[in-house]
Image (cartoon, rainbow, N blue to C red):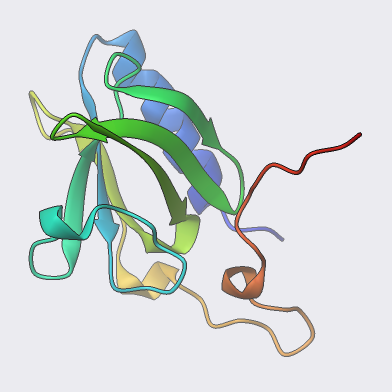
Length: 126
């Protein structure tokens, strides 16, 4: 069976929005594939405001969370593998879901690791 984590992240995100709470994402910025502004990383982690008013083109699937946001006025594309998400919670009340390292399962020998897959991207088709 597939991991519950991406489904839980999407559900908590929607629940926080439905309750007018600002969704924050806590990310382990030390894992391969994480693309976030390095100047905002603290102790290997970064907290990101993923409220629709703060980000553009938010997309969350079973492998990645991606969006664009401004940091010090500069637009940046962020890519976060689901495995790197440590928590999703509300800024105002800290309610949400926090994940432990136990939920990060090692890759199966018969299946390739999701981190070895290329991050989402656009390709020009003529």
